[in-house]
Length: 245
Image 1 (cartoon, rainbow, N blue to C red):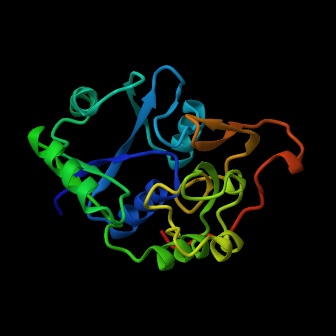
Image 2 (image 1 turned 135 degrees about the horizontal axis):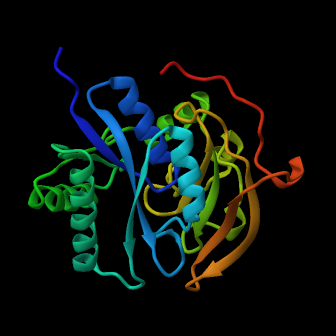
């Protein structure tokens, strides 16, 4: 039997990236060999989700995959991003000769998908979208039923109340989201930070910190990797049943 083609996965630290990894592993069409995270160099955080870089690395360790950092400066435009992306993919190809595929966790936005596909094609890569076209409401429930645990780490206050930042991504949250808000936050209403799921070997102990307003718009809740904190300060560490891999 011929070996499966290998692929990278764009990793934001959130539920969509995590569930994309789960989907790819279940389908078995490609072998995910590494994760790629976009890091704002000035903050040491994921560029949109504001998840700390050390949390991203802890998540990667829990998936048993190495993490490549794509570092971008503050105010990075599309050309800047494309250059950084090309350099990081070249690094990946040096590490895994012959690799030409990278997967993304996008669900709905065709313009974002088209931009990613065009950028990858210019670099001789193929973009994969294992979750694209899924029904957001059903997918959100499937994630929870499958054992995924995550917390809202960033809320766009022009679309959702700041009080939602820091909440667990759970059935209660889905039941209380305004009707105009996508259940997976696909329109940028919110971002999440994953602490457990079937793609992890063990749950992460994440400590919730303060919530602060950034850029006059985004309510960002800080999460750190905790050691020796009392349970009330941390995400729930009880092991959840695993879905079949």
